[in-house]
Length: 155
Picture 1 (cartoon, one colour):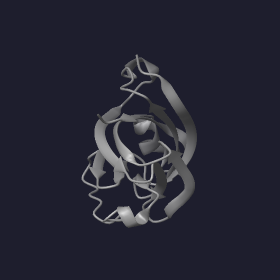
Picture 2 (picture 1 turned 120 degrees about the vertical axis):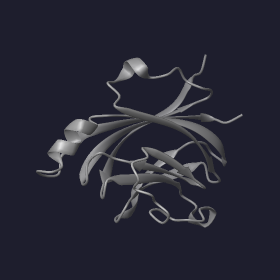
Picture 3 (picture 1 turned 90 degrees about the horizontal axis):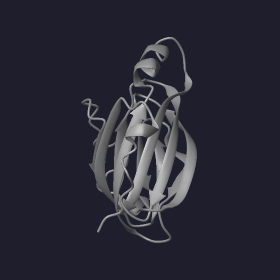
């Protein structure tokens, strides 16, 4: 059974319906976010050194629960009312991912995966999409859309 190694709770500033998790070593990422971003409705897109995540709201603050496991965790089907989900693989040369906004660039927040580089499998779940879509048309909601991001080593 997989064991939880690390957990982080983050507030993420979403703009233009998206944000990314990108390796902190910019030299290892051929296309800096949002370059190459395709706002085509794909919830999760893996690129070299980054994960692009599409939100349901234009501008708002989302919450992200990030978990790092030592092996594949059980599916989180019973941990939320997930409206969207996806799986991907990412290689992180530094072992840390910065959170990036579409126009705001990198935020001060980083996710630590490990002390060194490696490849990771990731599951991303999201709830609150319908509500944030509605509320973001009237203002800038906070904490309505919630993401659970689970990482574990790719073997």
